[in-house]
Image 1: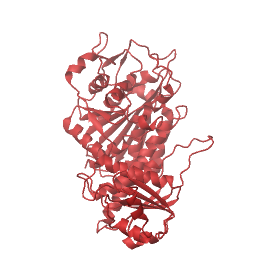
Image 2 (image 1 turned 180 degrees about the vertical axis):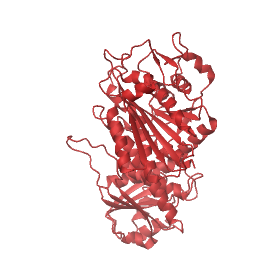
Image 3 (image 1 turned 90 degrees about the horizontal axis):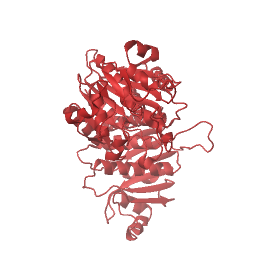
Image 4 (image 1 turned 90 degrees about the vertical axis):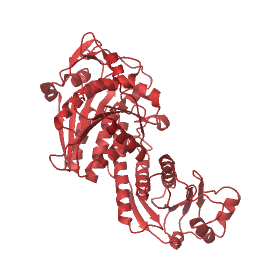
Amino acid sequence: MKKLINVSLSKIKMAELSTLKTEALIIGNYESKKLDGVTKFIDTKSKGVLKKLISRNELSGSLGNSVYLPSLNGISAEKVYLKGCGKLNKELTESEFLTLALSMANSALNSKAKNIHIFMPFVKVQSKSEEWNFKILARTIESSSYKYFFKGKKNQPKNNLNKVSIISTHIGNNISTLKNSIKIGQVTAVGINTSKELGNTPANICTPSYLASQAKALSRTFPHIKTKVLGEKEMKKIGMDCLLSVGQGSAQESKFIIMQYLGGPKNKKPNVIVGKGITFDTGGISIKPSPAMDEMKYDMCGSASVMGTMRAIAELKPKSNIIGVIASAENMPSSTATKPGDVVKTLSGQTVEILNTDAEGRLVLCDALTYVERFNPASVIDIATLTGACVVALGHEATGLLSNNQPLADKILECGESSCDRAWQLPLWDVYQKDLNSKYADIANIGGRAGTITAACFLSRFTENYKWAHLDIAGTAYGGKLGKTSSGRPVSLLTEYLLSQK
């Protein structure tokens, strides 16, 4: 995935706003009944148009207020959009600023213009710098521009926009810092769009082998990403029988993918992210109901987020060591498929009684989590569309977070807030572990009513030797207001976390 838009930053004088040769000019304006600053200037140039809009209560500058002015007299821009930023000295929350950025991005796209300018005034956001504002704006513009293109389909979506200039009248000597923030925001968005693209790709195309080919392609584009792929023979040889049990009913070969980025000293412990990559989940022998089963192509969104995050890391080049791992299989019913009641051995040596073959994500992840112990990791985060129970608990707004290390959990929560990609922590108490007791194996793969928690309890049995956190993205990877389309979450959260690890 490449950048969709050329986003740049420049400082201008107020007087230059009226003479900008651009197809569309989007202006952020403050809430006030009096004309001041940019609104006063535009009103003077347009001979009182804004005064009329204020008198009719159409232009207020309040957060969410939006006014479209085509062919505004005295302004060279073909189209002008005014976007309310709230009161000058009132702080916005992170989510409020994100809403503002989304509104600006949507106007840019809806303008059908190729070249636009966005005037961003100084907006106070709680505990955030202006660099953060520009980062979020650039990220939002790039990520909002994504559209899924399927070869052969008629009436393909089009994106006319190819250049966005963010302009300001108040930039001081920190223009290089702001430009770097824009780069981080936009590159993160490219990672988000990479994740979206993989998630939206039909499962007959996006197979475990396809994911492996995409990981190898990433290494070809960015040679400092080293990719290794294990097939079923290699996995069998080292004892990853639990992962293999999930894919044994499918004609598609399961794959285990390791992507290594070494930007720090060789002796520096890496941070590891592990993605669930079930490219299609029928439920296996414990087959799912047919309505909405088409959505099970999104059961690999954990792996998509790992790929998207590694794409962002590859371009941003932090001075740290980061490893992305994908455990991928297709879960199908057949005469060779795993059956309820089967007992399999994990890479760790523990045995698992598979009571429900639709609880397969934890089976591929447990072997992956054992495998990454060899890297002596500083931290490990796994990402998975793991449980429908998480959607019941948190809906489509927050990612479920469980961890065996509270400082790690706190940092992830902080990064979720800062990136506007929030998570919410659920308990991982020992009292829930008993729900996974089995008569015939060391552990059962399901148990109890608290499905999201007991799923994490299962994974915790394989993470006792390092700091670990589990992100359940069943409600945030797709769905909700987005419908049947990938959100690209939690690439923003993961990138924010990994960049914070010095």
